[in-house]
Image (cartoon, rainbow, N blue to C red; front, side, top):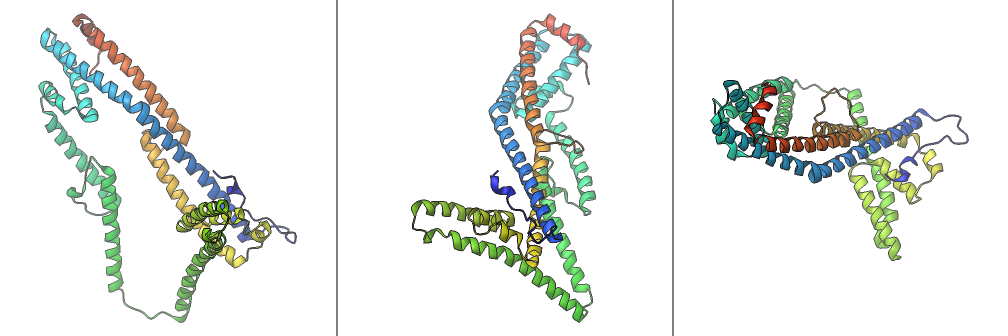
Length: 365
């Protein structure tokens, strides 16, 4: 994060004993925005690092584990057919084979193991999968109808892609709200607005325009000072081009704080000018900063939700970015230990006596 992020702050002028309310609010908003920026950057860096580690370490281990588990389930099938087992041992063998085959089919796409699953199951994998999807569909439909408060067509639901389902339903919900609002507007009796209402509406419109103009004014000042085509020095032209790119991005995002930071960087304004911002303009700045802060909070909530999903953290559990790497390290270590255990089972289960001895302690859930 750039060192100049914390520079933007209004200080009392020599003639002031304390800051005015609007100035205090400005400083508080700047402080909160910087705090949210820092936290958002930590989340983004943690997510990127975890995704890289997952690709480089976690996924290869998962693939390796799947290969050993496939060897194990085939070995168990071979031993089941080649030796005699008691009824209790057979039940345990069936349970273990079905559990392993299910994991391999679902998580490792080993559809070639479906016949093996069907061999030990009273119902085929596809029948059970269809029944499971049907149950999940009913539960999802009931849950989302309660959440959205509208009847949902099952054709719009996909239990295998919840995010796509939510995106689709959110769009439908917004359209429904717009249609209902439009219908109410046409049915609502038209009444003539009073002079006071007209004046208030005009004032609100003007306020929105003034807020927009405040950002535009800062953008124009920076654009005028940084236009690279007007610079003869090649080195300075490169610097101005880079700064102008930052200005353009900040303006497109309505990032007033970044624009003010850039004004300080290029010495277009100094601390004295910052301290003397007119109250009216400061009010407009505060409105822009409030909006910017809310957008950052929403983006941060989205990042936290993605991180929570990544480590399967329950909704009530507070999490911070460092939890991602800690959990990922535990997952990687857990996979390595599981691989060693499966490798040991592969060696020992070659001997049917050791397999039968192991089955004594195996419990069917």
